Length: 448
Image (cartoon, rainbow, N blue to C red):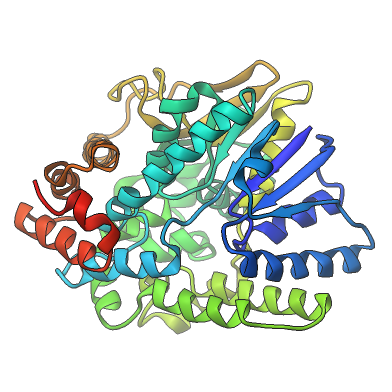
């Protein structure tokens, strides 16, 4: 079986390689290909992988290549984690919105829409290549914005596309920890779309034990979302929101922090430039990667705790490295193993959330086995959650159409439909500010 990772110059690649080298997967991979457009980044990450091999005493044969055709040819599994436009593009996504007094975040709000305008055409071309060169491959998408990009890729590859995000899994683990339980022993009643979801219940033998946690301020203080949203608000909503709901529930506070200089893309750009400019032995490269990765995680959602640094210090220190790599590998193991496994994935709705159409990409628990992936029935959800999901999905779907058609009017519509954008005129100014830094897209989106 051949595994291909597209975007292997990214920071998650060593996590995937370590899991393979440590024998933490049950699927046998006869061939592994890591692809990136940037040879320099690929070389630096390759040095980190050599450091992992030295540390573990195990080497996984990997083909490192800048040829997408060669990487994809004959693949059985394709992981896709690309960043169209690099970190400069992300800076533009965030600052073009902030310049108009709107939340500037990579996936949430107008930043996610502008990110999609340049990402969807690239993902579509990759999907078309996969369709030609690896017609039976399972396509696992971690490219942001995950839900939107997954839907776009499905237009080419259909049911072979599965979206993943580690945020729901990490939330469930943290809640289980606050409950003093092993997450494997519990059922997590989670629903939503990518970066817009809620944990509605935690079932233990059919009994929901989440209300007891929500009623206990001391326990809520022990994990990130409990402290981030506060006991009073969580009691009010009766659910635990995905951390990205902070940008909606505490919009003014997040925006003020961003306007004060907490723009994550600027921090990451400086940090990554230093890492990729580094030199040294494989052991030194691995040390640099670990240090950079830890700092990256420690600064995650920094705008959410600006002014609360002392209060959040222990939460930040306890934050893990995220489970994207393991989540992707575990998904493939589940699809090729006997029995069934439950994972929260980004998949077509079918009838999981009845207020959405069948093809809308939802983020819900799914039962996985050799027969495929089946999303569970969530049923009715609170009206406020429905309304927010519907608004964001409408904006995302318009963004897909804008990206594929090159329509300026549709791009403005996508921005204006998003609930974090206050007016059509603001949407137009955000688009123009974004295009000012993207000359390659001006011809495409510059005129109605």
